[in-house]
Length: 177
Image (tube, rainbow, N blue to C red; front, side, top):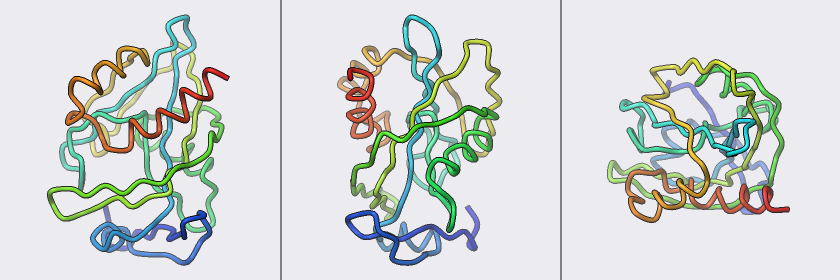
């Protein structure tokens, strides 16, 4: 994370209110726009690609989370930001669809927080698609069924990011409709 990276500040209805320096926004618990991408492998088991956050991340290092997540830049759509970050973090290019958004506020032991309007994006990957993780962003990755993920979340919630379970609600609703 660089000191010059800016993210979009929003109100409770996700209307832009300005920009804030990324670290300062997380130090001051300011409400901002984010996204969480969920990619599913095109196979009968409908497996989700999870990533384990790099061990040097500014918060939640080493925790398992959705395929990728980040913040859109000023003037960038949430979909375009998701496509950009998939390429940056995992070397993947695939179309994404928005499922809506939710708000959450999580506080971390290092004094940082995530106070986000989190847009949930979904896409699919062909089974043979290569995954090329960026070690600055991703420590590991794995495929998992939603059933197995829900069991792991219930048994070991401390191993997962705080937004994952909330975002899964939108994903599951979409998959069941």
